[in-house]
Length: 470
Image (tube, rainbow, N blue to C red):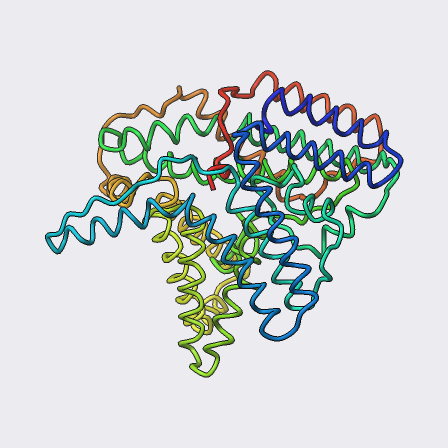
């Protein structure tokens, strides 16, 4: 059930109305749990068994971690992590590793027939796996008491607004909210609905319109001109942002209507002045997860090695974050590319600060934002392309300054309209969160206007959200 579907709108309205009709929190928890199961089963019904099994494993693991000390405590944490990563490895990475083993053996003249799994990836597997691991790790660290009520813990993993594409929450933020009974709040409803309709506009009107240019340029790389390829890369940068942040807006808005607060996942990333700043603004929940549980752990264990510890920590963390996005070398390379630039920024920090100090303040800011912006336009080619070879062909086509087809996948008037939408996006996003509308008349006018814009200008091609594949 996609957020950008009539099915979801009907589902959301019915669940929300029933939610506020219930006068006991136990009933609300049960309703949200059933609704979340239905939401997840609307994709591939059988996979609810996998999700349910992992919920049960981590629920008992949390209790056993909390009750034990020493080796036993560590044993149950490892058991939980191995179980979660094991499921992720089988469904998401098995075929990738088997394929690479097969190719490696061929280099030595050995051909071995290895079994390949023909199974679909459970939707949102990486997201709810990482959220579940956050729980057992925090219980192990003593930052969270194990949740004894199974429905509450199950809802922590399965809460439908953020189940399949985040944000990846921590138990400290969510468990207490599920237990607290909160009355109907009109201000929260207005804020939540305003955010939802803006997220829907970002997905249906902007992202799915830009997708036409992106899909055309990436599927016609060799015959397209350098101009078409460059504009296609730029459009993808905005497409993936509008698609993913649009989902986040819908998730945060849906939760807000029910008086539940999720963490922000984006904070104006287009205005970042460096790559390190960008990753503090883009997909915040994932990269804070990697920072807390991967980077810090590696850096602490290697802390006596000085700068080597930082270099190793950054390289490993971003390689894993690339692999998290997909079982393919172009995703891993995308992560490594970020790591190399981050290490460069750290190594040249003093030199760059000295260089920028000789420039007017506005010029240094403008230049920093421009360099970062251009880097991510080109880097995300590796994220969008289907393979390393196709990404290289695409980038080569941009820098070859060649002629060729001037077809953008849409007419020029439509392309200009898309550019205007991007301009509106940049102005609007720079004022986030900005969804609080105290005046009821203003709210209804804003909401109605946005719905009309979505209806008349939306691209309703049933395009799934990009991050659902992760």
